[in-house]
Length: 269
Image 1 (cartoon, helix red, strand yellow):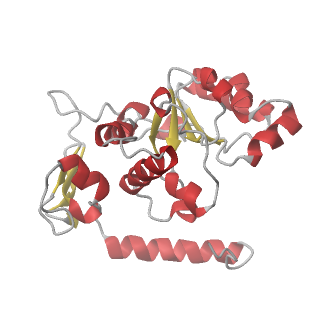
Image 2 (tube, one colour):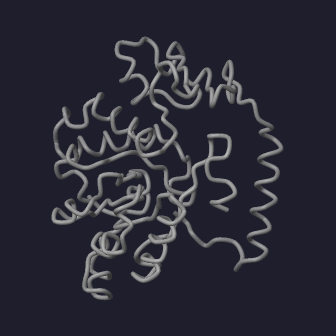
């Protein structure tokens, strides 16, 4: 799949995705690192999203989760770590120059994961924004995740000036650095990718500070236009896709998954 699809039309970027050091052994992670290096791609996995994983890793391997990942060679590649929410102070030095921590605050709140450790000198961590899966955070909204990160950060620090607007926006925009598309800039030669916000809607008007309006008040309904690689995907507030058809196909496939599995979910959170 990587050989066939990676880089297709300049819009697809594939990585190898071993789930985590608690589902993949150190040997399996090492094989993934070598395979990714041979293919010329990066990797993505979940690390330390819950505190009990630290003790479990030390019991199983005599090493913390980040140490297991580092020893595998994955840190030497372009690496997006999902979460890293409970990263220990001594593990920070293990992060590679091309390592990013995609934090998903809504997940930690929904699953009751506790305070985490990303609040300790957050400006020294390569934080960006992730969404996690629909089971854990439902809306898959990077903007909502950034908003919650800022709000919880202020609460944790007991300081309203923590996670200021520009600092939070910087974390949100780091997604452009974590991915290889060269986006996040408007200049000659840059990809024709952009979002145009309508801040005149009741939810955001009147506007005293555009960043405040976007981070704390806006949602997808405020996106007037969205362009990817020079093609409109949303224009005049309307998504230019067959929404009804997509929802119908997704529902059909979801029903098929349930038929193959163990029945309907018993999760109530």
